[in-house]
Image 1: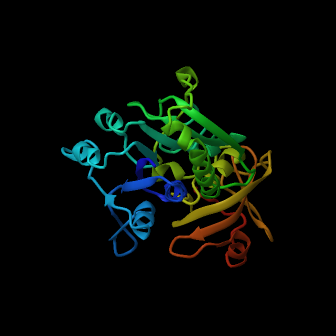
Image 2: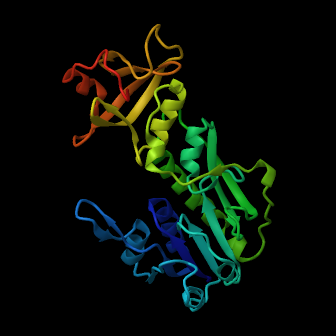
Image 3: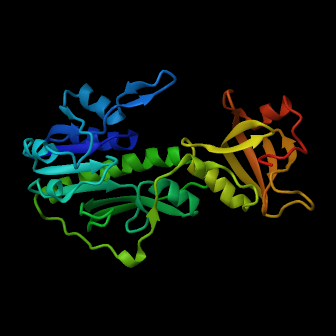
Length: 312
């Protein structure tokens, strides 16, 4: 039985932690980010991984940062044979990477070396990738540069959002992790060095990235809406009110004659059609600032929207 130290923070990491808990190995502690303010009251709220750890009576360690004095020494006290990292939220320095007997491994939500970095799921959707997957790699000092033990791919659905894809990849990553775990602990699983020349990068998302530019092609706007659901949610505005766009579909590749980008050209039973720089996007679900998410068709019935311009 191996001693495993787990590092992770968000929902994506929870299936991997649960899968490890169900093995014969001992998850000796969970390392996770400090509690963050959340909700209208801005009260401190534990992350999903911390909640899972406490529910399973596992010790939780929440350092302010991995390079803070004393952190490496504290982690060494757990005497871990292996450290499993899943969306922890910070790069581990060399002294920590060198501690466990079998090293540190990472479950990453892409087919490395494609989409190294903080937001691989969103990047795959924005790029229009037909497939993505998960990779198990041995961690190195660089950003997702370590050699890869195994990958498992999956197609991306035509209308799949980042939230939906994340759930599937989280489960896929947990399954692949357990499939590889014992061989990694025994030193029996070969690694494959990544081709750095083929690497692409997925930077951390900012809220400003989600503002819709209606002069873009419809296909790119639809990808943006899918990629930023559930966070930070694609945004535009109608007059002086913010509008969050949750779901959409491309309904035409050509823009109607004389239709400026952002013009609402039709309101139908299945959504609101908006002209783009090339093509037409049908908004299927949206949310007016301060309101609740509604079907775009229901919104259109309560507003005189045809002929008005979004984002203009």
